[in-house]
Length: 396
Image (cartoon, helix red, strand yellow):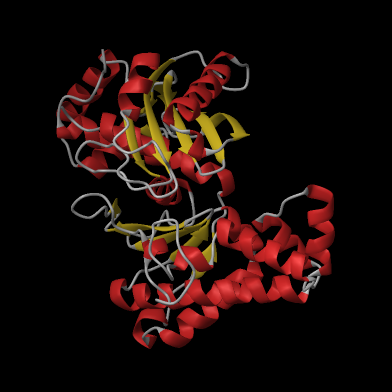
């Protein structure tokens, strides 16, 4: 049976404790503006439900010392970040601190059964291992996938790089296996939630999270909440057309941003540069490894390889052009760039910044930071845990 708060007051208390950690009853009372008796009633009920516990006494503020309250120490959430080429799984406590983390290479094109089997195996290993500090039970699982997810029924819908996943019952599969609530969202949205909870966006209510991985997507946060659009497809910027005469994209159209830049496009261009002799570095890497990736382009650019540097600059320019339009339209307070290709680092960031600052309205960019994510591979895990905890920390 899923235990959840019984009213909005309890839900707000849980979310405050999740974000700020243990707090005294006096501090909580000041924030939620409840009378001492009403606050005591709600906290006592949350304790009975097993959602909060006592943490001792707070330092004296004059008079009787107030008791400290914290989320129950046995609360556990699982965050799963399924990417195009990898699976990351983490277990968090109630405050969404990552207690254990496992990852492995994977190919989302193998289909939902194969990928979810690998996911469940990773979760099982994590829960039975020593690193996850698993002395509690799983209260819920949040999961991100690299494709559009219907906001109505939380299933993948016609994802371009995920053959076989259309309308697949991901939630039901994991619920049957682990017996707890499951929520599914787009991987970019869960990364944005991770940044909102524990990253550079903790104090920003309106921002964009651009993920550049195998594909390109954008998480949109408005007033501290993910904006998903009417059906859940908001932020799919990888399929904004950059040039109608451009290369064919995985979605079937031509000239999309994703067809110019992203992991798959970089690997394609790197292979062409290696085979043509344009890049000696990439040709040597291809001879030794048999294939090329975006990481190889980054290594080549870092060594000063002219062809790789050009790829990074051109890719950054294309991303910057699309992002400049988004900035002028949305006027965010922050732009965060993450994902595997963001590992190209400051060379990519410098190009994106240059184009956005030049092409967007000065009023929109005057105080606009454009930065690289500092959470790395844990952004999706924390965000997925935040997704399911948001659901469970809402009153029935």
